[in-house]
Length: 130
Image (tube, rainbow, N blue to C red; front, side):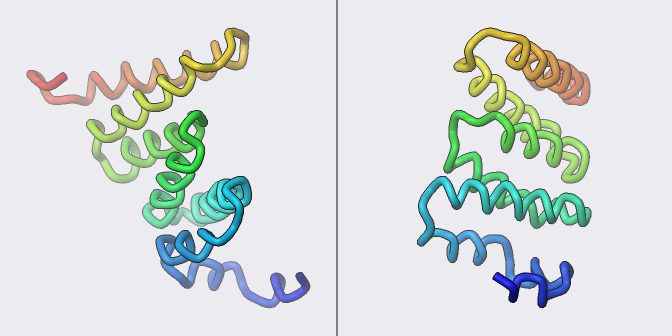
């Protein structure tokens, strides 16, 4: 619609992501996934990671076999929320998703990236914690 360009990018996130997500509940699931992906990407580009996190979580719930939102959440919790334990949980969820992918170079590349992240997160854990 032509009205989309009428708002400045700073006003796109005027509503909280959780209220935006509730409003998108009337859309078909596939469209909600795309909206979560795109709105979260917009917020990420604007360095609004804390606002993007609930959208990544919603995306993960809507597409449980997709490792992408899990990877985004692992990055967020590792680098922005400084919670390596939660980052590790999300990276583990990404590995679970990837374990269901067919073998091939795409899976191998994604697996290596997530494995590297998990190893780094393990080093960040305090001694005595798994």
